[in-house]
Amino acid sequence: MESKKIVHLGIDTESISRIDKLFRKLDKYFLDRLYTYEEQKLCLNKLSSEIYLARNFSMKEAVSKLLGTGFKKVEWNEIAIYEDKDNDTVVSLQGKALECFNESLSKKIHCTYSIWDDEVLTIVISE
Image (cartoon, rainbow, N blue to C red; front, side, top):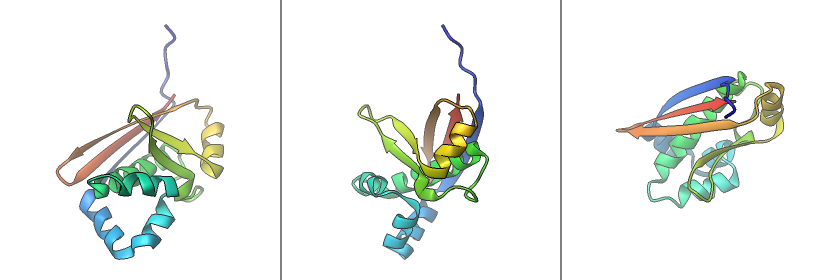
């Protein structure tokens, strides 16, 4: 069996109520600036949409840390968080985010999250 090597790591935590307040205050501007259209559909169709908005926000932050760029070199919409047919969380990159990832010589991003009380914790690793 081939061993996998962790190349980069990104971790973030976010307050669910903070993201919910931003969404309620800024509405469509907030969504369009930070989330792709597909992410918006996914999150807003969930029963607890504020949890999914916070999860995606936090995971995008973690990915930007994994890339080593923060959001100085990449745009929020260049990092997208989806669920595959098995409901596993998947990271999709495009534009400058994808270029930075390819330059890192990584092959794949793995991600996970955990929710407790009003917090979401996200962890992403690349191999």
